[in-house]
Image (cartoon, rainbow, N blue to C red; front, side, top):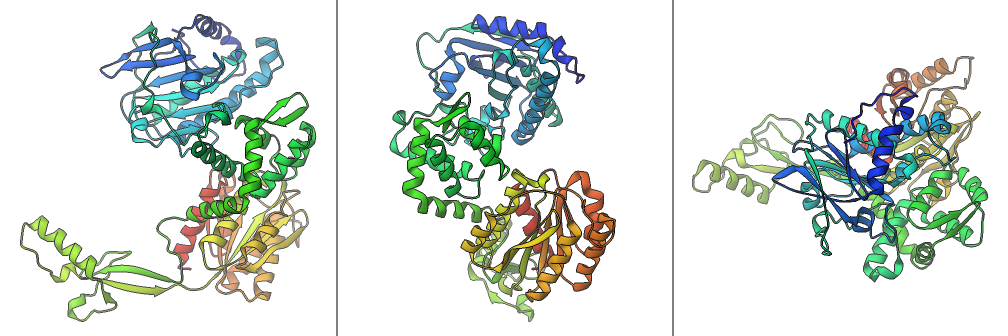
Length: 586
């Protein structure tokens, strides 16, 4: 067992030299070892008996990478199980903690690697770390919407599973990962569980039953992709899944196809990186494609794998269907509480005084404001009579009526900060929101960007999705943040376009850095916001926590509200937008 206590000074890696050697020696002997009290680590499969979870068995002849990911190589995947009392640990919280731990380790390594290590290898890549808890799992840098199979979640209600592709030169990072997971467990008000004993066994040549652990929706980068080993159905599903994820790194699946064509024609690594950096993708996009088995890199050269060739051909033959699938996916992210179309149907209960879908009038005594909902009325009466143990009857309390409300037509205007700091995930999330609104609402949408010393109407008020796609693809992130100019330009445009009941949605990751009419960019933006309030237009600001104070002041000046997020991610933008639309009755 390796006893340790984590602190965060920049000398910590030096103090991990000896504990890391202990783990390396155990790994060389095909054995497992404890880190602290709660964690078992090895490169093998672990088992335990449900009635004796304090005793962990290391199956020495079953490689974790081969067992879980069908890899052809051995000794590449580190397998960690961090045990706790039975309960649910939020896998999203664990993933966020692990990503932070990797960043911290890489920072410490960059400061100390000459002392601790002899090579010049780069640090640990979080793309190659998977997790599973009792709530779900997946790649920590993925959508974290995997591992939802009931048997899989139940099997992990007493431990957090981590699988990581980490070089043995970076074994010290395992301590950072364990610390991150343990903190997540403790924050869930669960106690860590001590492992009393590790037993090393052999499988006896038989294959272990991994069916409870199987996840056919995996987004892992740890799994080798061999097209020859896939059935046609599995292959098509994998290709479509990877297309959807990679297309999110670009403006469309067609942009992904162009990148694959460029790689196939021999573009070198540095030129591809420079090309992708124009849209804020760069290194992350290349790492994802390598991790997904689409490309492989060798020094300055980069080429498609056999799976990458299959993906390129799949895109070429199925682009129309792929576009339709991605559009459907974007549209369906809309919250279930929202209703498409121009009318909204609500069921009303008579004789009650609640909020939301209830009404105070008694339908039977003259308070009729809608049509009788027969099926809902009978259902309510049946439920009541069962509870009362009486014969079936309908009373006034059971009556349900159906009311139809007309929704006001309104125009959305997305005012997007396109400064340099928005490059990458943030600008892609803003574009995603625009596409989503085009597909999920019946309203007109416009997109205005501000950057450097200009504000531009990128997408005029329209319902034309194809026009919007063409315009959105031209948006890049550069320069400073002229927020006041963006607000003033938006107000002028909406007046000129005679927008109907407009709702301005400002998406920004910072505060203004460039003035408009004075020398004070903050004051200029507040003045522009006050003009929006005077116009009577709706206003919402979606921004980041570090700038909460100013963004709330700006929203108040504009007569609107602010939504403060940890990060400008697409799901968060969609949720905030529909919440604000519902709040404003638009």
